Length: 349
Image 1 (cartoon, rainbow, N blue to C red):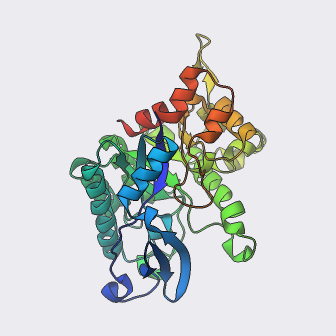
Image 2 (cartoon, rainbow, N blue to C red; image 1 turned 90 degrees about the horizontal axis):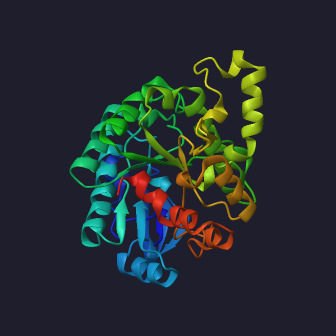
């Protein structure tokens, strides 16, 4: 069985939100030819997409082709719109969440869903998360790696996960038992990366590591011990820089340990007093495109915290979901855990 934790979906029909809300830069869909569309931001093309982004039947056909039993649906991160006015971002989120819930209702054995929430207003976000879980039957929410600063949102600064402003979201997720899947967006340093697709190649891994470090150093996991959170793309740069991060914690506690005295490595897999390996405190997906990188994830997190994720249906994803997992030597138990067990536990399925 394969459960793909990391896939993206959009509705086929999407309103012109620039016109509806009265200000620009919302995504609109231009269905310029059969089975194809452009994601437009004003007159700029953000991305070309095909019908596997919006057509559940097409997705199921491709899942059957690749042996994927279930996809976990979440929106395309550019739709987060944390820069927008909170009321507008809530309206946008509800439209996306209602659509995902409808797809799941029609195909409950093939899809599970994660909503999106307006993080620029944590109280609205907490309320929409509750609606997602209790009314729509979604398993939690996908969120971005930070909350943007923009005049439309009313924010004057960019917030990382350690900011106390965001605590209502963590509290609601913990109380609801909602899974939180973190996906990078609006990448760090993108102004310096105009060429070579570097925002996706360099900025995304850095964004995700920043989010993990902010959560750890900010003590979020200490205050919310039952919070279930997973990070896309294998945790970005974090797993490969944990040695540097831990070293800094020891040599400059005056800078690193100001809000949390726990060693960052203590959140990763470790041997307990019985000699058993306790898994990491948070989850990552398997989307690292390299067998040695996946082996490192398993060492750092344990099989119980690494879930199959493909980034379907986009080109930086894994074209054949689960192929990397199946390519390395694993016990049958660990292979089954990575392919479906971890996702099932993370989502509470």
